[in-house]
Length: 360
Image (cartoon, rainbow, N blue to C red; front, side, top):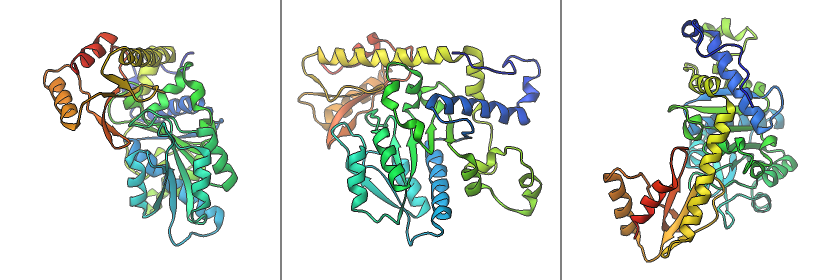
């Protein structure tokens, strides 16, 4: 699989080219590639923003505006539904929008499922809800929600379906886990952060819409000093998120894809997934360690039998001080546990063994 580019990243005129419309073209090519990987149709597109928080907020502002137009008005208060394990930025976005959050109980793997969502919506104020946020790779456990089931519920009830794939979206490139994302192709919007598992520099989040004109209607700013821009039909990246001034955050990913090709990205993600499976096997083989669940992507949750909060705190701080690894613990169902998250294909099982040896 090659990344088809009309201009070489090593072109002698690339320096001046990226300062103008070429930068927007390059970002749009990258966004179209991401949309295609997710299975969204031709015409899908969006913009690069600073991170997942900005991406989720901008998508939900679009969803609210689309619901207002479709329903011919707005309720006294809006609400968005998500799992109670969703990223904190979803709650933050709702707070900024002065909207309520319907937190749906998760299943045994920390996932939002279609049946649980439907049951929660049956008890909620249907007029207030305008969107559902599902996770495709939760930050805490790497869990992928029941995207197909959630998509069914959203379609039945006329709700915007947004997928937060900020961390996990890179898994779409890997044949070994691609089927777990079934349903993302039905999303109205999704995000993926290249600065996480797509090896791009901080700060970069790709925000993709199925129907970009809906986003433009929600976000385009009107002012006399913008008239000459707004009368034109040219694509204006500032129209698709809650920003006006912006920089071309997608260019580093575009240059990397142009240099290495998408096969290298696929192989790197598969390498990380293979390491994750090997780590799970290593934990199972060690006395005193217990795997909490089979990893879906590249996050591994496990416990050290007999340890309490202070033990985990001393462990991770010692590893950081000795420059072995940065492995902050987390909590699962109210219990302090160990968490490993892999995104670097250069990490080896020997690195992992050194971390686990420190728990002896």
